[in-house]
Length: 272
Image (cartoon, rainbow, N blue to C red; front, side, top):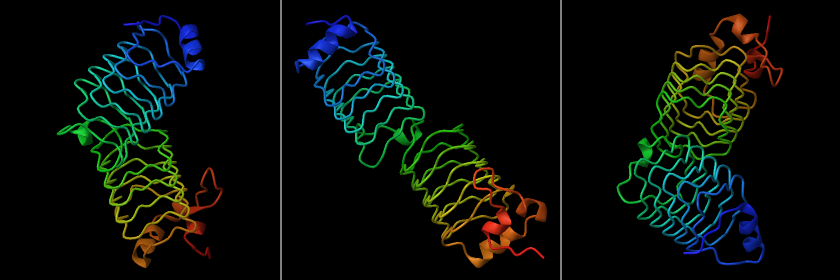
């Protein structure tokens, strides 16, 4: 098996369009490397540092990624069929549309990795409880403060009691999500879909909910709304609006730190 032991040699071979399938990378540092669409079939990438690398649409069929550092890697559309990911670190990786058919994910770390409906998992793999984020994931009590989940499909996700302070959920699909008791203080939910989501007991202080779809959402027993901005939110029933306006005047008069609109103003409250 041919081996590559330094970045310069790898870059040269990439520039020359050489086939890298079956290559032994000998634990070299591939940090932030652009490997989009590269053929790495059966390559030996064991213990390689690939943090934040671009592997979009890469062919990694049968590749050995044993204990590889894959944190923050973009695997969108990558083919990982039969890849060995034993003990690999996939934290915060983007797995949208990736194919893990017959892959080995034993002891792989997927905390806060992002998947979608197009991600293909190996048969019987319990990805919903893996720590990864996506539709129907079970992440109750998880710390996701300041995470970037903009535009993500999180329909049906379970985030009961989760910590989402400052999290960017702009345009995210949170329909049917379980967010009861979640900390959403200063979260960005602009244009997010929260249809039929359960937010009972949640903390919404300073949250940006402008133009969010709140049709059927449960907003009962909120812990706080001071500074939350509901400007142009759609689907908010009169009953739900009344519950929001029942909060103390001090809360309704609080400015949102980003939009400079008070909670009361965003709900059409007319001060006497």
